[in-house]
Image (cartoon, rainbow, N blue to C red; front, top):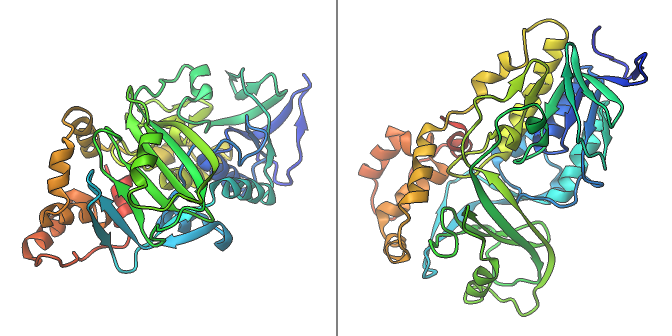
Length: 401
């Protein structure tokens, strides 16, 4: 049976409704896959536990330029940011930028709603308020008994603690960063053209803290390596030395787990695949996962269509090569977890020209610290000069093995 190109649902003899693919999780990866699968003629259903795709968001939503290019985010939901201001624990800072490169702050709740609408416009059905507590694989598909639904192929895109993967007996994510963020209105004195990134081994052990001039709000947050707990109030108090909070009001709070153990080696079965955080496709070092989620989600929709039409043996045949190894980043993650630099050394480092150059490589340069051209640029550049950069560098740093 080929894809239901006209979107018609089929009722089986046992009363179950049949779809070509059912995607559990209205995430970046899940909605990207749904839009792509439906656009390629598959009768597609998304099952999302939340009642609203935009509620209880668990991500800051910073896009590298390439991620926004993949998704073509509407202008009203984004704003460009052209550089990074990197702070030491004593709040001294250095500015890093690359001509022509930009990040994007995103109105994430409205973006998720928009992504759901785009999936529906391409023919997918999106159901919210659906908690998938039971599923089982059968010979020619996957059954979701509570939803009275059967799929010829299933996708788990339901986050770091993937229930879909657990129900199929796939390995679970074991290593996490714990993030906490607050959105505030009325914060003054924040440079609107910089991502403000804070190094502090006491407040944000194992990762960083941040201030993002977002779309209509200021996003303030941090992440720490489990078992540490985010000290968001302590960070907010520290920021009062830099920014004006007299008229600030909390708009929303959020938090969540970020997998940092690397991509799972077991991420698919005969009739299912995991995508995004559920598959651990998040950089162990940078915690960057949005770009690969969008990119691989889109590719997965095509791969599932090819599989159901008999052109390939399994969607993983087209997607496995995209699974990142991140060996270098996993080594650096080990270092961040086990050899944390004291704040006194970070304070000294921020004013060091070599440290600034290394930071610029990590944020912007082609292939990050593995690029010999970057090291040549360090050797030949004068103090204070900007290094030549590749505008696709940050995305490649997130995605490269």
